[in-house]
Length: 464
Image (cartoon, rainbow, N blue to C red; front, top):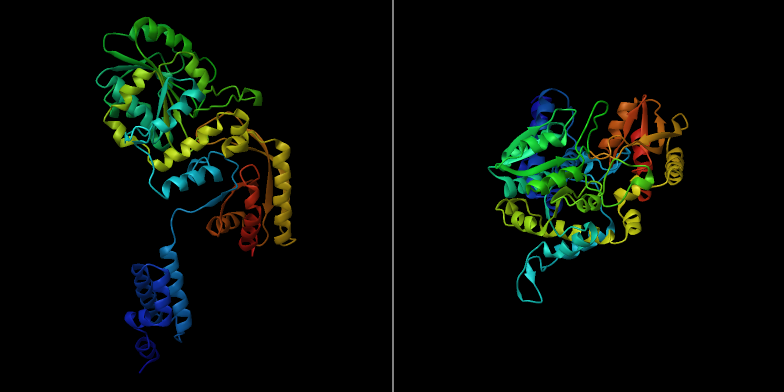
């Protein structure tokens, strides 16, 4: 008998491995489907290695270790926590805004049992899910009423479907934007059944352009905030108060797709390009839509606020059933909105606002802690430097604003900076960093104080 035949004959059967002590233990830890898949894949890969002459001796301990590693990899949850070291606060790819512990506690409280989601406790009858946030929305924004759907694109879609299906919606050509994932305003409008009526030019639109386009088919005047881009130079856009006055003159509702949606005045921080929802409502705009997981700092959602009669009409549209939020999102929204009853509380306790508005000195102190932790675990040959840099808001919000920050810059030794970035990304915990000028950058703006120790551990593993 040849060595290959001897090794092949010594290979255990799937059932034999499954009945072993290790197999019994794996079945208690991992799903049976993945344990069987791991055993079969390991046996097959081992058999192929024997046939190729890559294995001269069959070590069962190594084989069983390989099976367990495969079962664990197959069973790992795909959605996991990562450490955001990029400096981009509202990072779309990393889940946008993060939530605080008390908000999550409320979500858990509602998730762990039954709730009065659509039950009127005082009246002992069926209730409405949006009643739980209606008063908060009114008190915070000044609007007559409000709704929350699963994102702002859905908010625009259901508003157009409810208010303008089969009729014309007038929009400036300069505001026919494309948002993330190649979703475009004209496409959303087409899906709603509304008819797009473009006015003006790419760079200039005047109030007369809107007025000349108004006819008996006009259902809505739509303004779209340029939240994810800017046009400069020879440009002209119609101000919202002008559009509202025109709408009243012709008895045509005005809607403003605000995009990011900010509930805190950012002007004291030198940010003058983002209006607050409250200021938009004060213009008399009939309907305003905005995101809940961008500058608002809540869970993913699209908030619709405006005139009571129009909100009621939107709420009755069949699409509302398809785009409504669930009890967990609603629980998170209620908790986040509660913080906006006091602006200082919102700025201090909502992570998105806190990270965007934090003082540069506070960032520097955190960066120093990160550097000290990195120095303690990295070899002396690795160069670790504290540097000034800039961060971004992200999420399509505040595109022109660069936020001063401090970063820890690492020049690896023995491996390339790309390999170091890869090891951090593939490690546990997963650390997402960026590369600049052949240097690994860890931005202290988005690294939480509680994550510094984990960052150091990740660096230690990645650099060795």
